[in-house]
Image (spheres, chains in turn purple, blue):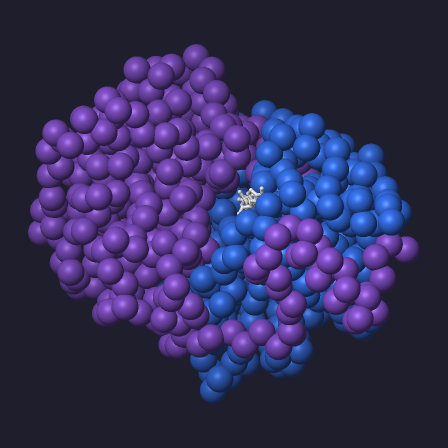
Amino acid sequence: MKIVVFISQIVNPQVKLQGVDYFDSSRVNEDDLIINPYGKNAIEGALKLKEILGADVTAVCSKGLKPNKALREAIAMGCDNAIEVADETFYTEDPLILAKIYTNILEKIEEFDLVLLGVEEQSTSSYATAAMLAEKLNLPSVLYAEEIEIQGDKLRVGHVLEGGRKIVEMPMKGIISCSDSQFFIPRYTTMKGILNAKRAEIPIWNAADIGVSASVVGEEAASLKQISLSNIVIEKESFIIKEGEPEEQVDKLLAKLKEDGVKLGV
Amino acid sequence: MKMKALIFLQIREDLVEENTLGILNKLIETNPSIEIHGALLRDQIKSEWVEEAGKHGVKKIHTVKASELEVYLSIPYVKSMLEIIKDIEPNLVIAAGTVYGEDLIPRLAVQHGVSCAERITDITFDSGEIIFHSPVRDDQVMKATKIVGPIKFATTRTGAFFVNENPSGSSPEVTEVSVTFDEDDMVVKHIEIKKAERTVNLKDAKVIVAGGRGVGGKENFQIIKEIAKLLDGEIGATRACTDVHWIEETYEIGQTGQSVSPDLYIGAGISGAPQHMSGIKAKTLIAINTDEGAPIFNYADYGIVGDMHLILPILKKKLEG
Ligand SMILES: Cc1cc2nc3c(=O)[nH]c(=O)nc-3n(C[C@H](O)[C@H](O)[C@H](O)COP(=O)(O)OP(=O)(O)OC[C@H]3O[C@@H](n4cnc5c(N)ncnc54)[C@H](O)[C@@H]3O)c2cc1C
């Protein structure tokens, strides 16, 4: 069995860049990039299946500057291989363009069974790529998975549902987007993994290697056009106690609540 | 030009899903001349659903009735929607951002060669253009987008739009569309839906003390329970906690859990994911989190940046007086 995991990079939410500055690439440096947390959930899913099925896991990253570091981390977690797919022309803000890039990557990889992705991109809440990819490849898929079980030659997938959880069965060849449920909580890197990561040779593919050009994956080709980004002004005033010993903080909070006439309890 | 919208009428627990009704209200409010069509796909179509949709502003309903549509599955639902879209040629195809809506819309968009707007919290119409507004970066930034192509596709964020309390629409026209399915359409098989037990109703709770993954374990929920009791309130939790059974699943709050509107909501060890926050309309929200950057602080009226394991026992002691 061959599993491909698509991960992406996002700017670490902990960076000091607030509001629209967060999206200003000129202010971001390479060290601020991390693997999208949900992508790590997808890696975990792949590694769990690898333990059971002996699958071969390839991590692919084609979003964010210099994905090499992210991919080495994926290998350090336990992925067998990694491929960096990077090109200046890629416009990855449109989920459909990303799905096009992924489609071509999979066509070049040729042999694969399961494809895993994170449920969404944490910084933009963009979730559509997984469903778009399934539709483009005409493959069965399940979104928002919370658990994967193997049932003979099929997969039993439990996924998030309003009011509960739904269980479906799908063939091994398909697309699954993975949530941050307990099942997908990412493992830590291991010493052995880190050594593997150091030694790993990570091929770099560009647009031409996967048979695409700016006319299909560049910003001009995007059907989703960004008109503007603007800071959301939070009108409500909030009273956040950031410093102090716990006891002091609690006292401050209770005093302020009293002052504002907020009743605790009914 | 008169704009035509097609909305996916999702049925949840035998009713037209709430967020779906919210979209109808929003569309009519922002674009009164819009002609709204609804798609109703199911094994059985109930007249109550048709009437409800009509009351909330749907003029024409297109139904596909087939046993394959008893439970949502991507392929048969996409196939049915494509038939309806072909028939009516709408300018906009929209669905509430439920698990099903978010699965459906991107696929329909791909079939029309275009992208989609995701989790919008606002929609505006500007000289024939449809502008979509989606919050990003933990709700700090609003992204406005448009789609280039004859049909625009979008999902909304759950909880974003309110249902009209006094809808005045009339009975819609109903057209049945016939679609046939084959074995290939059913490759993904529905096994079962595990409905969460809702033994405690949080809807009317005035005070809720809720815990998230930061609680760290089943036994640590004790302090949450004790404080809730002191305040004569209920407990609440995120899906991260109910998923691992730290607390009964009835206490899950959010898109897939219960919706609450207390006077006071205290959230400890909760990051503030939109799926959780969309279920909360609190008069006063207090957050306790070790991470100053946690999105829940954007929603909080009061907050403490600190370790809940230290803060809550002190709070409890002081409340006991
Ligand atoms: C389709 C879909 C629907 C969903 N529906 C829901 C829903 O209805 N309800 C819901 O809740 N979730 C829902 N989720 C899950 C949701 O996306 C988040 O994963 C979940 O809400 C996160 O829960 P959390 O805040 O407890 O955990 P995390 O996001 O892991 O946050 C834990 C927080 O605790 C803080 N923390 C850690 N230790 C401490 C400490 N000692 N003291 C204080 N703070 C600490 C951390 O800083 C962090 O901010 C849904 C997901 C999907 C995909």
